[in-house]
Length: 326
Image (cartoon, rainbow, N blue to C red; front, side, top):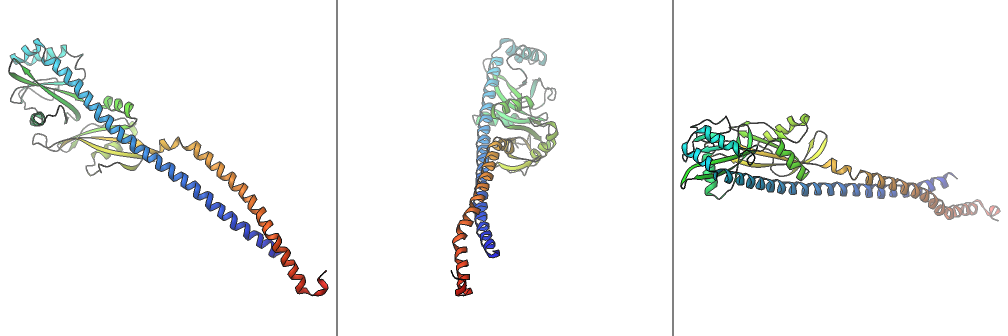
């Protein structure tokens, strides 16, 4: 009797072990496939977000250029520039505030020196920090330039004031601040962070991340050795797909070591949460299958062992002698 139970137990144990291996392997395979699908989705989202970001920059640059073209064609503004007095120039600029709202305007002489500026940082007679970079961009056919100025990133466009020959240059700068970062997040579903660096000194961080996370984001963007390729990192206990894009690097002598960086982040764990109900359902189904299979394995073990038990009993009677054989 002990042998019979041992044999049944061994058969049932082997079947249950095989079932556990099959169910466990299936569950892990589905889990791995789900994680890979989420990572691929995040990669696509990050790539799409980068394209949306570039497109948004282009559109903002065009909008800025339209406002600048309107300003340079204004008669009172051209007259004020021709006179070379900062106060009338700034008054004319303020009249166009609806077309260039939230932007900074710099009126430069043909020598690149500041005549008037809406940014107090730049005074009259000072050489515009990115004059050489703007000239190079114009020769290269670039319509806009991204620079680090006053501790923040700026998108710059330029135009000439004609009367009828060029008498001055006008530069308009759009600050890439927190509002712009939130605008980009609403269009790309990515977390966006901007940081400018001037002469090796980082400026103000503009980020869509919560305030409690911004110190870590600041350190990530400040790290000049950060890889440019998208990579999965652990960010406050969550897996995040991150990519740093260098928007500008102006090492032209006037702005040595000045650059602008943007960090794009796509949370992976948040995407995995959408698969959590499916994961729980699959786990429940796997456990139910395992229980049914266990009952089936025990039943099968008893059925398989029954003929062998009969054979063992018959062999025992034969071995005991003729008197035990009916």
